[in-house]
Length: 486
Image (tube, rainbow, N blue to C red; front, side, top):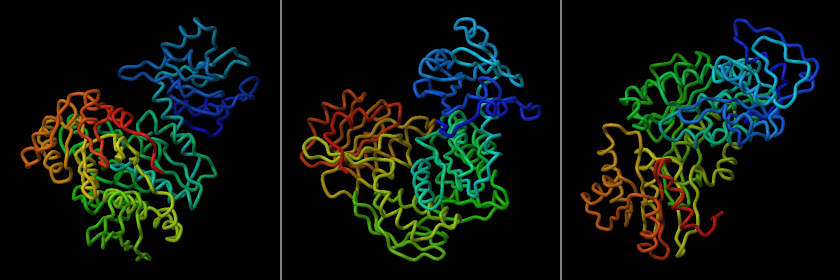
């Protein structure tokens, strides 16, 4: 993932324990070896790459070191316990932390460490500390963090050299890879921060060291694992707690839990949203369905109407958060306005042309109650027959039945037809019927959904497709799609 060049000697220094780092002499083959790419996925290895063999819940990266070598990796970070066996089997050389590498080696060089993930964290933290971009933005939230990251990245990169998290590289194993792409040329960096357990975001902050925080929402995503909304809020607030007093915390004024984070920091607080009290505010809102949203933006030094082409009120809030970051980073309003008008036509979901002249809203990236509600709000603005294809929402714990029923009730208000997909989809269907919706269909799998859809679709329908990643709802999109609407 990291695409800046790393001399191998510097890599060997960065991987060492912080309290006992030793210099490494760049001689022999080490002198001529530079790491051009760092990845934890052997399928993404390019010539000159360093492969980090992580052990996950279901996959052991050590099983793919040979594949990485075959694709052109020059070195691999591996667990010390597995290094000797790999070296014997393939004739590779080993270097351990604090040791000088061999003068020459054949094939891939194994860098043996006690724990590859911890070593990756040390290297990324050390690398980040070598550079001082003026604006380092951490973004988290139950929903909206990826879209907000994209918009913040666009606004900043149009004004200054900016490093931005690609895809959803927001975990303890992927955010370090982004950090390793930081160079002296960057004036800003934008990091998306997700969490699986309490303490995850604090760890990411130790690596990325942000001085600007953006928190979008706190909702029941991960409730099954975290146990309570309060626990989720505390985990998200780890980002706020990590911001120094000289930094800035940007909070969604429309989310009471997030707005309450203002009491958890000594940093300057900026709020955004539609609330009258918001520092960066959208008002006089006119929705144009899939054509976007016309809003008046009111903020320090800004009072202007603008069309946000990325449709949906959730995208309006994401743009407001990005504008707040832009204000902190002294980006001119003319630059931000130009970016918003010309570069934000499709964030997070894509509009496709479908069978029978239908229009597909592909929002299959993931699903949580908040994001499904936002998608349904958008669907409700469409001026044609509206079909909602909604799959299970996962990891909602004890509230999952009611959360799905609530989504069903909203679907009855936003759509003309519902196709519920999955075992939990039964609850969505129940909620929709309880709210008076009659055109309700149910299937257990995405495979079953496709023939049902072909039967019930009418010419020119607008079809919203959304569900948790595990549901693979994108297969439904692929079956209905005929071409991409630019």
